[in-house]
Length: 318
Image (cartoon, rainbow, N blue to C red; front, side, top):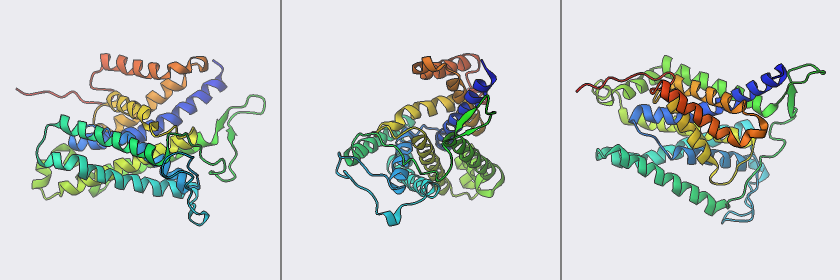
């Protein structure tokens, strides 16, 4: 393989892998606190893309009860402002999901399987609501959302160009910044350390004076924020492929947290990068098998290391 092609594929893999990492961190945070997988996270991912699309001035299609809806020009937001606002919206929606689908069952000490089914039901309800409101069409972000930036940047020479789409560079840059802020917040702030304490043992944390309910709500907000952010980044790179846009990425997110190690935050980052790089090096004429390659890699890693790349082996005492 030519070096320029290798470098191009490598950078592409880092770009998509970093988005996988952000999305998977939303799963990981909730799993580390409650020990369950929030299947509604994929629907939050979809909502983030739709919110940013309309805040940037996008117009919905001819189907659904919000057909032809577009916000007035006076309230259109620049892309990087819109992505922040929409992520706050998805964080608040994630809190609502926790109040509706998780807290009542948690208060009753219900079986974790019931909570998982409840989150799946919320995901289906959100997806169907989106379809009812705006139809099932695909939507493309406006071509000028990044301002005057060029469509691609050449990292090579005029003779041997290595052209990387500007959107992929921005995606990688935003992902690195978000991951750095999250890592610092969790490891070096009082709030982050309290979240880790709740994740370690909620009962003991409560006895030590930590408001566990508050940190559960905060975890869902951060999870929803990350999910909405990832949805926008992917949607702006390709398109919003209808209400079921987040399902495929939801499966990838689950693969990432298993690959990196369940409940392990650094593992989610490593798993996302590994999965992104694996997909990027699939030959273009075999692109239909990208998902197969990704999940084959997951299968192989789990055969060799069942706890995941950075996961810990738990000893069960009897």
